[in-house]
Image 1 (cartoon, rainbow, N blue to C red):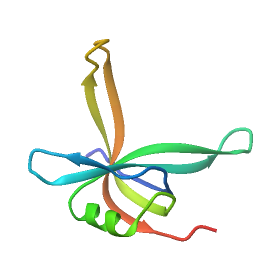
Image 2 (image 1 turned 180 degrees about the horizontal axis):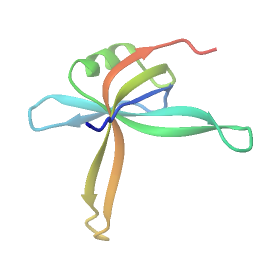
Image 3 (image 1 turned 135 degrees about the horizontal axis):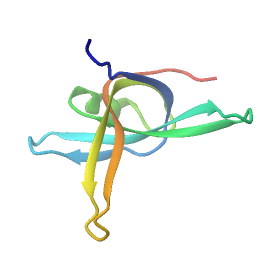
Length: 107
């Protein structure tokens, strides 16, 4: 059986788009998605997810999206690992590698 790595979320763009240069010369972008969820005390709490986009989704988002817009995202979870130079601590950042996104209106 093959493992499944798929995530779909709806939320609001919570940050400005940040460019991510890569070796191929193409530029990707990263941004944060705020997703509101009910916590145990019956209050809404925002969970923040890091999202990275590349290829055709970069142009689409840069042309039509901005901070505060409601967005559906789907993709797969990936990890970026690095070691801090000063403390030599190993860090892992989990993010969503975007495969599709759509805008929606929120009441």
